[in-house]
Length: 323
Image (cartoon, rainbow, N blue to C red; front, side, top):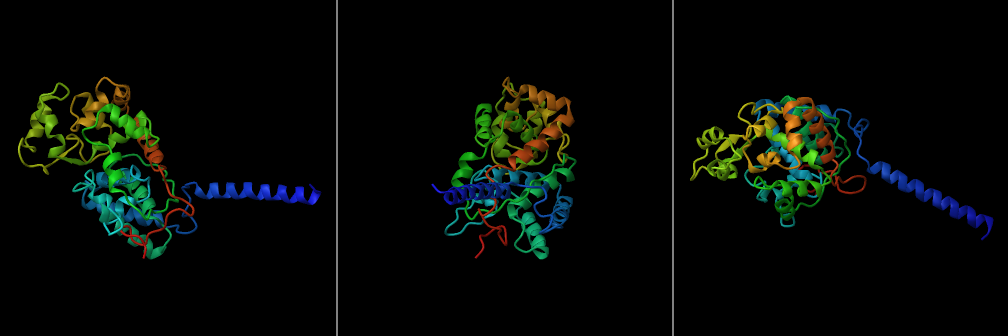
């Protein structure tokens, strides 16, 4: 091979390596992603979230849950926000979301405000991630630096939502396996479950637990919860997941578990003689450890299956694919 041929082959190799590195860099999420393209995006989102949480404290829990339910299905791509169409089977109608997933209008309002200042720049997936962080801080929970640069999906999956989202009736082994399939370990599982220190659950999700006469539930706690949840009827009656500090994102959830006062089966199994017992005990005694790990786990969860670079789109409205 001549010198010139060697030279061109070498240059082509260098160009290819640089191209791959460039694509890789572009594909990485970054906290500064909108610094140049939409510098006021995060402030605008926060203003909308603050108004929503001020109007209804419970909305903080709903927004955190919405981000979680998005990331566990197809990754953090805002697929949960898509409405039903002839070609899209909406995740909103999946059993884990139907009648319980909330906050869609809040995210849509935040998107509309951002579109006014930076049309076509900020994804709905990023707005969901930022909203979850802001919701946490607005109810006394930890803050964290949100990595940005996600793009929105053009598809949704009701079937995946019904198989991949954790159930309130799951065993510890099932929960560990479910989280592991998303790249999250047992510590992430226990930390993220701490979001149940805020929010409410419907009666039918905990009826069997409070009427089951099990040894893993405090009798007085069960009796108290029966007042809002009759043995027959009242399926949609709501009860706070944490009776003590229902509107504060704190470590009291773990204290409840230590006292056998977890409302859902999937809560109390975290303290049932398994591998997560020591983590529950640690978080109950150390609020700083919980806050730090909750923030870290939320960042880690936000990386799941993110669409970046040329993948996905930036939706104009969060509930529909651009026409």
